[in-house]
Amino acid sequence: MSEYVLNFANDLGYGSIKAALNDEKIKMPSVIASEKPQDITEPIAFDNHDQQASYMKNFLNEMDVSVSSSAVTSQGRYLVGQAAVLSNLPIKAFDVNDFAGKSDDDLAMVLTLSMIAGKRVKDGFFNGEDLSETLKVMVNMATALPVAEGKNTGVIARYKAKFMDKTHTVTFHNFKDPITVAIKFRAVYVALEGETAQLFIKNADDKFKSTMVADLKANYPELSEITADDIVQTQNVLGIDIGEGTTDLVMIVNGMVNSKASTSLAKGYGNVLQLANDVLQEQQMGFDNRAQLQSYLAQKVSPFAQKHQKRVQQVVYDQLEPFADEIVTAVSKTMRAANARAELIFVYGGGSIPMASQSSLRTKLAEKLRRFTGGDEVPVIWITPEYAQVLNEKGLELILSAIK
Image 1 (cartoon, rainbow, N blue to C red):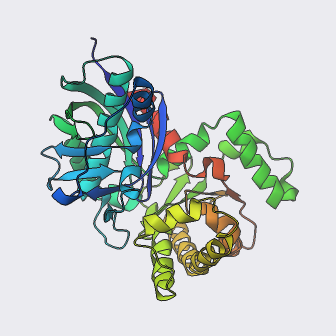
Image 2 (image 1 turned 45 degrees about the horizontal axis):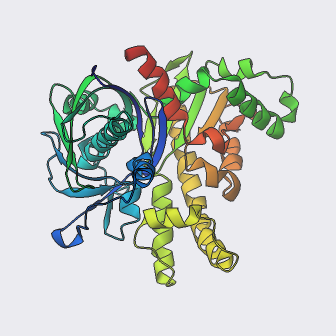
Image 3 (image 1 turned 90 degrees about the horizontal axis):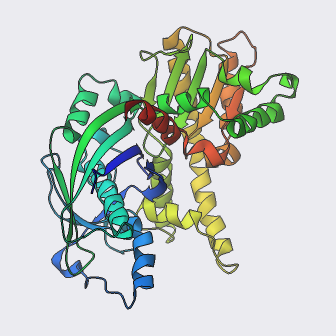
């Protein structure tokens, strides 16, 4: 068959991955679980083709892999993403407390290579390919690193080099006969988180524009004459991307990213969850890790469990206010370093969703920003939950369309 090419927009977050793999959009937890010999279960077997097809349709949530690559230092067999969360095995997530970068963590490579290989196997099955043969894939990828990490000399070049000019092999152990995928990269572009989100805001479609206008008018009725184009064409803005392990602050001055002023706060919503879980454990309501806590918060529970879930939610919300104060301090430092006035603020990222309703961050930001403008208001647009977590991935798709 002709060469299989995968165009991959990879927003690899500390808590979850938002990605586009050719025509397929996925979201999965950024976790793996290491399998010891006693943890390994019997290979999956199917009674009929329909059962097999149903399993393969969900294959990216079932991945059981080993990875062979010079870019991966630790070897082993892993359950990946949702399969890891549901396994009840100890899971490995990005450590939101240490200062090592995402680019230095084997987890980034294992997750990225597993997603690529899983998509290749899934498509190979539905295309009727012989899965006993090594499946090959050529990849064009756009991905991103936190601002503070990516600004360090040589980091982006080293991260890109981990993927390029070598073959990476992923083996799937889900079945009686293992399936092997050989991965090569044709093009890799490494952007900075937050910058990619601002790129999508600048190129927003009509639906997204309407949500930004709605938030602006709901909170600043005196600006009712402002149009969507006024918003996206503003040249001096600050983007606040509240992620799982970092909060990226991206300053745009005269339409260009001010890399000197743009920075990362080495803390995100994951740190809040970690602190909350510590409190929950003291109250005998704890979870094994923050990923399990996050999964529980997202669950729709029965009426019998709603009271307990609300108690857990309240413990999490209690940790948000100190985090909001840290974000405001970081914004203050960024504004001073930029030596320019932001005319508009955007707040987005997965952590922005709970902070919109459960913290005073909007009010605190407004108060702080007035101190840089002689008391004048600087509007804050809170990106709606529908878009808040996917702006970076959408921006990466725009970059990918230019490099593939």
